[in-house]
Length: 111
Length: 116
Image (cartoon, rainbow over all chains, first blue to last red):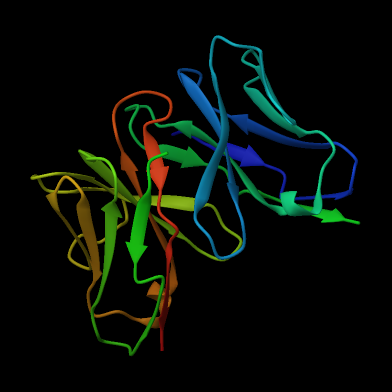
């Protein structure tokens, strides 16, 4: 079945760049997503990338997709303390309906 | 953007009671709603897919008699945890889909359930 893997923790200093990595198994995924979850809150869609793209940039966020290796990354430039949260990588399931999530990467930003 | 609300945001109940959680799409009609469950420091696990006017489709391992889902209108889906037990304590999150495509799914803020 589909599976999404992420590293669990990342700690950076304020102002540095953060890179969160994700691998997925379903090569037929058309869209891949990054969600942010702040403590006790629901999920906020940060960005997404279509599978025929290699890169997408949106202000401080850069998504890189290596479809051959099924590897997705999220780079946050100039990381701020407000970026501290759990970041989930997700792909659509084979039916193309629901989302399959990774376990989430906890990003801790220290000042 | 599209807004999805959940009510209540937190609930504490005694073991053996039933709890109903509502998921509403506030400014759009959602033909499909999804219910997820999240354990502490874990990912979101899809429990069921709910289509308006029809029976929900449950994921493997989710007891449909325990987690009753009703999607009676295009803006409301409810999840009822029947005869709740402490192991049902979790964070329940719903999402609603506007349409097929990239941005079609929006998440509610979640409901924290604690069963004593």
